[in-house]
Amino acid sequence: MRKPNPALIGAFLLGAVVLALAGLIVFGGGKYFKTQQRWQAIFNESIKGLAIGAPVTFRGVPVGSVTEIRVVVDPRTQQARTPVVFEITADRLVTPQGTPIEFLRDRSYAPALFQRGLRAQLDIQSFVTGQLLINLDFFPGAPPPPPFDAAAAIPEFPTIPSTKQAVIQELEKIDIAAIAKDLRDTLQGVSKLVNGPEVRTALASATTAIQGFNTLAHSTNQRIDELTPMLKQVGNNTNQALKAVQDLVRNIDGQIVPAAADTVKNMNRVVQQVNAETLPAVNQTLADVRPVLQDIGRVAGPLRDALEQAQKTLATVESSIEERSPLQYDIRAALQELTAAARSVRVLATYLERHPDALLFGKPTGGRE
Image 1 (cartoon, rainbow, N blue to C red):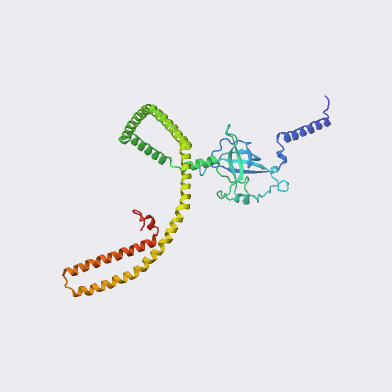
Image 2 (tube, rainbow, N blue to C red):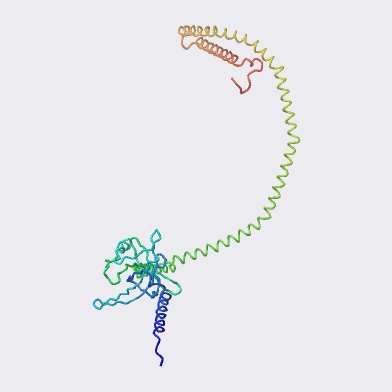
């Protein structure tokens, strides 16, 4: 029997170790050489669709994965929790200068981030399969986080309900029974209104109105058919009238307008003749009448004085004569006639002063004064 070769055995063992390390690097994705931190999150909702290996993202960027899902039952309170353990890898987290971020072992940075609203939330990974993932993000105004225990084996990462769960919680606040009752009452009211006598009467009235409208439309169509020939005849008559008006306008343009122009010319000649012959004679007559008017004006003054003196004399005589004697009556009548004559002379003198041409043409009938 041959003795085993120690060198060959040592080489075989060394090769196995090398293969094991290579397998860890290839199949482990290099996670044994990455800086990681483990956290657990407790979601107060169903985690159906969340499986081990599900991605953990920060605003959609993968930063880790789910490593464990457990159901923890407390015998004292008879309550169960489903903590989800996940790991966050630091190789995706860098500073503004581009250097990788290193996790602190005491995790002293976590409370400040939680106070700013950093939370874990379930999100849909695929609508087809219904798979879930864990998304990390900042939610300003989120409820205060639970006290942070840095000494725990796996510290707790605060959570916030998913969008679906928030919708469900809002729906749970809605009083479905009250809404159903209101809807039932509304439907009953609508049913009473629809089946009530008022609606039936309104429908009957509407039907009657529609029938009347149809009858009116039919009658209107018949009237229109009857009026169509009359309208055509009116149109023809209108066209004939327009044609006659056009002929009349043409006749006016061809006959009356020239005649009117001749008449205007004749009137212009008459006016020119009047200006040349009549006006000089009128001016001469006015010149002759003006001295006569002046003499009448001079006579009117003494005549007015004589009349006044006569009135005074008559007053004296009247006082000396018996009141009801014929002589007093005759004297009074004579004085009245003399007064009227003086007034007529005065009016004539005034009129001739205003219109001296009246000596030639006389006083126009119903004309000026």
